[in-house]
Length: 296
Image 1 (cartoon, rainbow, N blue to C red):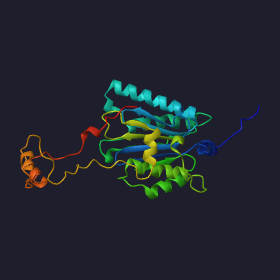
Image 2: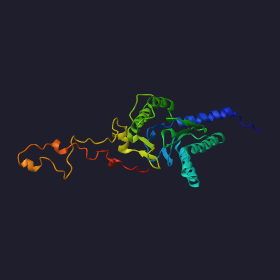
Image 3: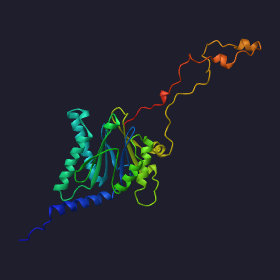
Image 4: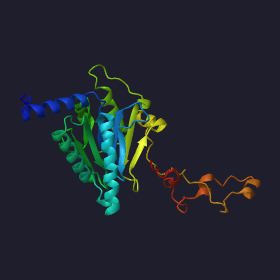
């Protein structure tokens, strides 16, 4: 009778971990970082059909690297978990923490019991009402969960890209600054000279803090190109300047009006006509320029 080939548990776990890491390293990196208005996701992905960044629930996003069919199955399972929990209890009971725990159990079970581990690494992020309430969880192939703060980079050259992001990240970044930092890091990951990644080659999405319920929104086309262009972010809506004296109100009697002009007098001046302008409404920011957010 032939004896089965024996492999120690330590060697078996090491071989599985090496196998999973090699598969993940072949994938393009994903950068997830918090900014002043929420959480941004960015990756190099020219495909318009196969997404590496997706929405899970109202204020929860999902990003992954590795084998597409494997992390797509995890995404679908996460959506089902969130829908069932939100329907059974309350929408506020669906949290990134609970979803990360469910993913960790699945990844850990597959890594230990199956012959081949899942070649995936995922991030589950939830945007809160305040920056301190934001949650970013990173899960590896063996079910390990890491609670990240500020930013996380995963994929092929995560360490090198992570150093690049760490140098430029700060909590009060604007959306444009955050995206430019993420894209610059992605372009420096091949070890050669930094390269410029066009907006058409990127997959970018954000969880926006100020959106009423569904915080997830994809960015593409001209909107993304404008955000990536240096110094093109729209300025804040400041108060409109009012000319000194201001125009006269309709129907206000003006000194030196046509009668005085007909008589050839020059006593009525624009300064006299406008008065001090104290009785005119203040010119405030134009609220008509605010466009309501649209759900993805």
